Image 1 (tube, one colour):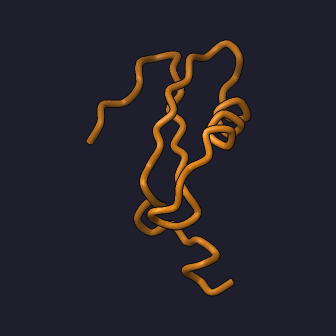
Image 2 (cartoon, helix red, strand yellow):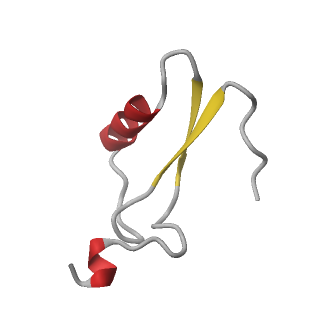
Length: 62
């Protein structure tokens, strides 16, 4: 497991809709900008696929 981010820094995880799909850099930036207050530093971590136990519309057939 990765160590938690330093105090005052926010960790944002971004992942593709399905495993193996490319992650759009603009999307990553949008997510980070939307999640991070201006006064906090922000570390963005891009995952290769949805986290364990995370239901995506594809997996649930929706």
